[in-house]
Image 1 (tube, one colour):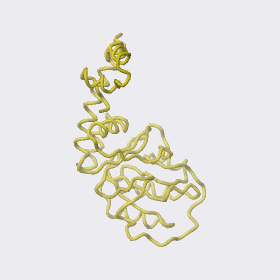
Image 2: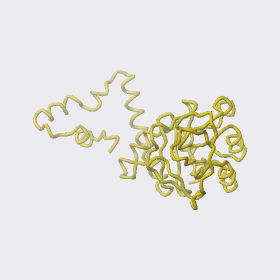
Image 3: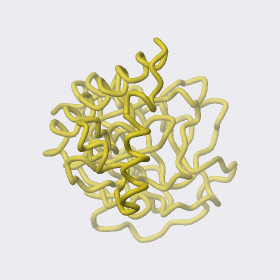
Length: 235
């Protein structure tokens, strides 16, 4: 699925819905560390991963963009460092001009006020005014893969990010996860509308029935109950 189509499919969904879909399908749940947050809370982005391992010089980002496709998301591996801002306004402007959908940084950014004016979705571990003062050996896979927390990602992966966090999916599983997430979204939306109309969630989920069953069998789990009445969401 191409990046623009992924972004369109994700427009009404969220990373929690995708996470629930992964659990239902038995797909690996690949989440970035919670420290990675959007500069603007309402930011939302989805697209193919464009990986880049930072080693102290911004040329790695410029080189990565040379192979970018519209809608790709630059995923920067700076080993989670918060003592230097490796992404700033110029790289964001270049990414925007290249048609990238956003930037995810496993590390810190700088030039916050300018980034907010530019408006490109940027997710990072925080801000640091100091730029890199080092030049490490370049990793041989600097443009092929990136590490984000415990997640190793590459060009065959797709990234989804919003105010709840950042989630990565293998490209071949994107279609089924999005499809399942949409089914979960429809179920939850119907439940929410029913609550607004006066039917409590406890009534919809026959919660009193579950409590009676649990009183007899303490090992009876709520998820078992939900599956039995056809109301399971997560799994």
